[in-house]
Amino acid sequence: MKRRTGARPLPPKRAAHSTLTARTRHTTVGHGLLDKVAKPPAQARTPARPPKPSRPPGRRVARIVDDEESSLLDLIDNLLAKGVVLNADLILALANVDLVYVRLSALLCAADRVLPARTADPFPPKPRSGEDGPVPPKPRGGEGG
Amino acid sequence: MMPWYVFALVDRPPGKRQGRGLASALAVREVPGGFAVVERRADVPPAELGSLTKHDAVVARLAASVPAILPVRFGTLLELDEMDEALEDREEELAEAFELVRGRVQFTWRVARGARGAQGAQGARGAKDPMSGTEYLLRAAGKAAPPVAFRTIREKTRPIVAAERYQAATASLPESLYHLVERDDIERYQGMAATLAAAAPATRVTGPFPPFAFAPELL
Image 1 (cartoon, chains in turn yellow, orange):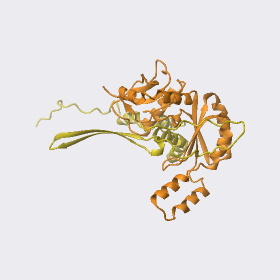
Image 2 (cartoon, each protein chain N blue to C red):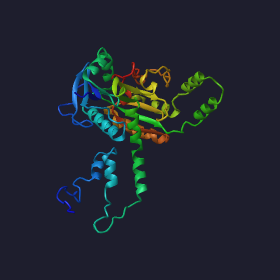
Image 3 (cartoon, rainbow over the protein chains, first blue to last red):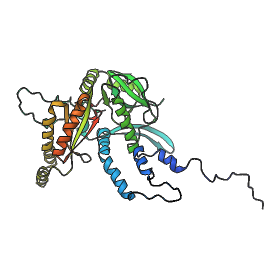
Image 4 (cartoon, each protein chain N blue to C red):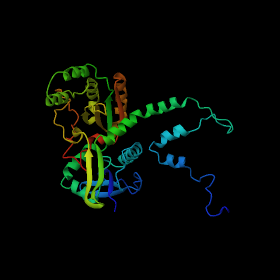
């Protein structure tokens, strides 16, 4: 039996673009964080010697999370506090025949974030002679988005 | 043709080169009462950290290049005629919203969870009494009073705060106090905030941000 060696090319020994690189490029973690984590320690000058990390990896990750905690909270508050938009396409079919098409666009949100406030001012004004307080913002409002 | 993913409404076009959005170039489209900064996109981006960070960066970049910006809800994907339909007859409301945020930035104060102390304990006692569901919810709503620390902050920052808004705590976010401050007063406010935050360790202030908390529901 003769083996056909030329019919199918062998896979390259080394891929031109590694999967790791591609995933890193599309990661949801911010580039700043990745740079901090992936940056080799400054002591690693000889390539033959494995570099010694300056501190345990777990400790380092914890420090980064601590630093970013406030930013993450702000990110969520600023961008997601007004809810999440849910888009969906729904097709009801029977016996492989598409019958009903529903295009769904829904807003999922706490009511008090999008509806005008019904309660009184949480900061009841103290009477002060000759001093103007901050201008209250317009009621947030209307009938949603 | 793909719909438009909307980042913000602005009072003036932010210049010739707006840069990139989440995946492609930004564009500016005129809408009733202002301009919408948009990007062609087929679907709503996932609500994950990468998309949120990019969206936030785009809005922050835009905020630095226009006098007034009204950030739009994350995930707003519309056709141009849908934008026009949503904004027509609301030009006056839009103008007032632009006027409120023009040349201003937002600072956010928060109180750490568990720092309410006696007020929270009082709420727990009241919840054990037999009552109807309606009564329970009304009581819960009535307890949404701002913490004392916010009152002090409000008193001290009053001279340089243009507008403010209080948001009671939710399941995912602590109670927050949002201040709108003139851009020229940022350093002054930050100095004042550092003193106040040091005096009240349970509070924390962040900013400056685009005026997310002062943007009305428009789209």
